[in-house]
Amino acid sequence: MRLSQYLYRRPSGHYYFRIRTPQALKSEDTESSTGISLQSVMDAYAQEKIRAGNWTNKTEKEYAQIYELLFQIIGKEISTDELSYDISQKVKTTLFGITLKHHIAIFNKKIGS
Image (cartoon, rainbow, N blue to C red; front, side, top):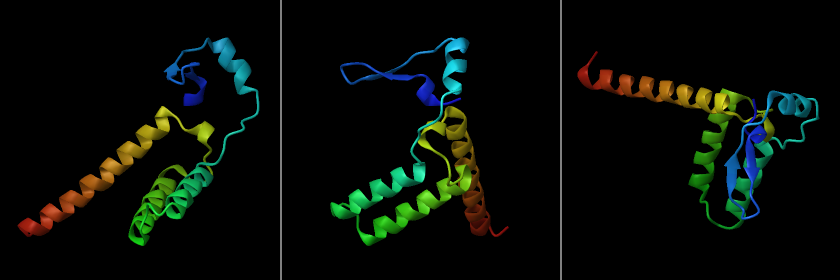
């Protein structure tokens, strides 16, 4: 399931979701995907921020670590067409687990366990 299957843009520029019939979705699934890799989108975004002077070296390194963690969770070869609710939930639960383990480790150090 791809979010792009449900997302539309009105002439006003606002986006909205619309559920399509299974027949319409089936015919669209046979068409080839032309999605851009998420890696290239994130690289272009980072380069623009650096070029514009909006990021310091520290910020660039922090975002590089964030992107690397994201790609460890979802894979580097994912395209923007493949992003879905299921993938976002996978990222969320994984990050929650990492954060929870980190806080438990800190707590255990404080109480001496």
